[in-house]
Length: 114
Image (cartoon, rainbow, N blue to C red; front, side):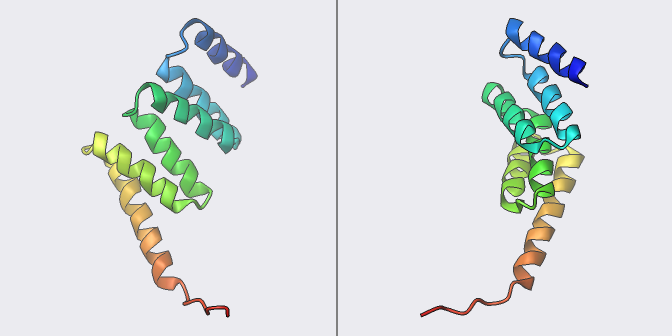
């Protein structure tokens, strides 16, 4: 897999605004479980093309895996706004909303500390 990383990084030296390279590198690091690097790379892709479906959806998936459901929701909502017909995004968005809703119903009221 290091060969793939080297190849992608070399491509970025020649074309630093190559969105697909950022998303592909993000995929490599996501698959390795290095979510921090993957998030950074997907975010770089979105700086170049804010409507990139793969970057938005994959960010949502990573945030959801990390339990960061509000960030996941935000990524999926952005993806759905740009790509309303995409079934995977719509499914991820609805599932995330259900999880957030379920969690909010299961929260116990907190006692105020004086």
